[in-house]
Image (cartoon, rainbow, N blue to C red; front, side):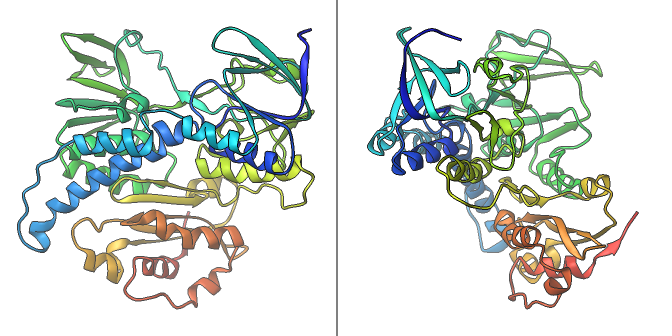
Length: 464
C-alpha cells in the first residue's frame, strides 16, 4: 500500500459511465464529499461512441430505406445519400466534438470534485489518482469506492492485424467520409447495426461472423429474418468463418479466411467483443483478480470491503440501462436507504437494426438449459393487422417462452418496426410474472404491432 498522504472524503467514483455519473451526482446531493475520476470522457462509451451516435447513424440510414419504399407505397422518389449531415449531427449535436466539458461542468455544479486522470485502488477505501501531468493524489474514502470502468473494443489475435488502420465502433462513428467497401467482423448488435448503416449509404458491405448465425445470443428465428433482410438489401453475410490473417497495403485491406478465400475492402471494422477495463485498476490491492473479465457483486452491488462495482464489468448485461439500474441500487446502499435488491430475470435489450430486434429474459435455449418445462409460441409480425398494413419493411416476429409449470413468461422476443417499443409490454409481463392466462384474456388494441403478442400467446405449445 502506498505511503502517500491522503485526503479524507466520503466516496470516490472511478470511471464515469452513465451509471456512475448519476451515482456521483446523487451522492453529492445527499451531502457526501465525492471525488470522481475518469481517464477519458465523462459519460463513457455510450454518449460518445456507442448508443447515442450510432442511433443517429441508424435513424439516417432508416430514412433512406423508407424513402426507397415509396415506389411500393405512394409514388416515386429519388434517393441520393449524403454522409455529411450524419457526421455533422454526431459531432455537433451528440458529442460536441468529443468534448466532455458540459458533462464535467454538470458534475462540478452538483458539488463533485472531478479529475481527468487514472484512478487505481490502493487498498480498501483508498484510491490513488495519476493526473495527466504525472502528479498523484491519494484519497481515503470513509464510505468507500465505486468502480465503473466499462469496456473497450477487443483486440483480436489475428495474424497481421496489429498496426493496421482498422476501425472499431469508435472510429466508425467519427467517420466524415465513407469508404467504397467495408468488411465488418462480428455479427453481434454493434456489427449488425453498423453493417446495415453503411450498406444503406451505398457502401459494399461484407459481414463476417465466426458463429453459426448473426445475433448469436438472440433467438435463431430473429437472426434468420435479419440475415434475410441484410441479403435482400445487398449485403454479403458469411457465418461460421475463421479469419487467419489480415494485411493492409495500397489503401486497402486483404482478409484471408480459413477456407482459403480472400476478401478485399477499403476499410475493416472490428466489432467482435469487448475487453473489460479491469487490468489496470488495482483489483489485487483489495483481494480481487486483476485478470478477471467480471467482478462478482452481491444484490446491492457490493464487491468487497467498502467497494461497489456497477456497469458492464459486473457481467449482468453490457447495457446503459443496466448500469443506470445498478447505480440507483448502489447509491441507496451507500447512503443507507432501504430499497429492493437487484434482480436480473427480466433484463431487456434491443438491437436497433431495421427491423429492430428486442429481447427480454431467457431465450428458449436458455430456459431449457435452466431445466424448465417450456412452452413456446411464435407469430410473424405480418400476421398482425398493423404488420400487414405496414407493407414494405414490416417483417418481424414475436416469440414468447413460458415456464409451463408456473404459467408465466420467462422470456420473449419482439422483432419488427419499433420492436424495441413493442418489447416494453413483454418486459413488464416477464418482470412482474403476469400469468399467461391473464395475458391471453386481455384486450389488444387494433390495429397495432403488439397484437402479434396475442397471436404468439395463442400459439403456445410444449415443444421438445
